[in-house]
Length: 166
Image (cartoon, rainbow, N blue to C red):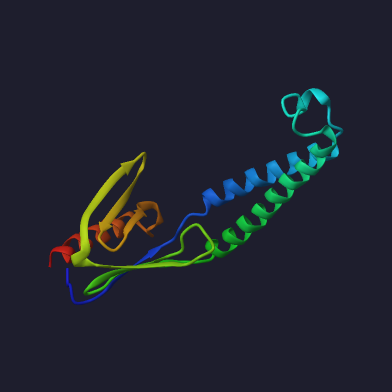
């Protein structure tokens, strides 16, 4: 492979985990709203009866409901932001530039000079692979499922290993 020309790979982060988290947040919000609107039975607050009066329970449930509603809105924005984005991993001539959106609202861009890479470790996890690039600058974990094709992942690994030793 030619070390002179940069290689660019599409890398799309899955939002599956965010969707599952949002489903749980919606379920918990609905459950808290239900509890807040249902009269409190004394035996349900048995262990808390000494510290929290039953009349305060609806307020506590509404507080939890508000928290889960805010979490749902945050997760919805994160899903929309990440579902339409395509990120890239570029192996340049002197360093690997990784521009990916982590599963959060922020954009993370990592540049790792090849000479600072300590280890490249490939891990088999169930039916896919991850690569852990450890360096003195930053550690990076990339999932093979996020590459466009399995051959892109293989090409990325071989090019990274070669450029690291050149």
